Length: 206
Image (tube, rainbow, N blue to C red; front, side):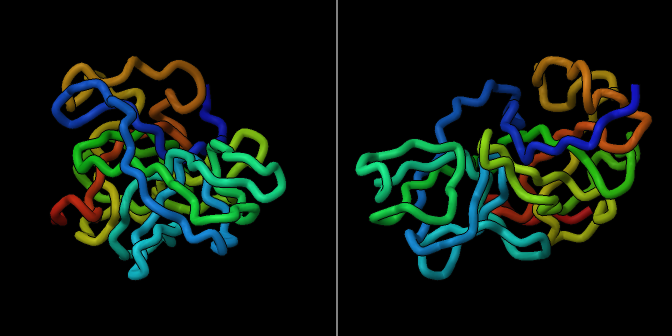
């Protein structure tokens, strides 16, 4: 069954050593006046100011994957825990949670061509901002950009497997995908990636 174009950003599923993820992100800060929404599963980058911000696809080193935030809401008069940063309503700087373990493995939908195939494993890939996140669910709309697959050392992610391929190269890994993204013969198939050009990981060429 052909895959449906329905990106959801980057989801942690495992680690390169085969251990299960512990969902213990690092706490960072978002400037309270940062008006750019950031959704769960979005790629973020460290700024010279010490704050994090939504990353732009390109060759800039990334910090990790946004996993929600907590802030003192002006409108509600209380601390709010949210899957996404809406871009306003914070009295003070925002506590952001970022998955930045250099060995983290992420599940992400591919797009902008494809499908990702066996020969693409071991190549690097960029992300695509897509059409933005969902303000109802708080979930990202980013995806892995098939059109950027290559050996460029500055690409932020490394492809380690894809749905439909037998086995899983990092150990036990996540359960097999059933449903959307599981057809490895059509575009928008699900792939597994790990960090390449990231704050805590050395760049790796092909």
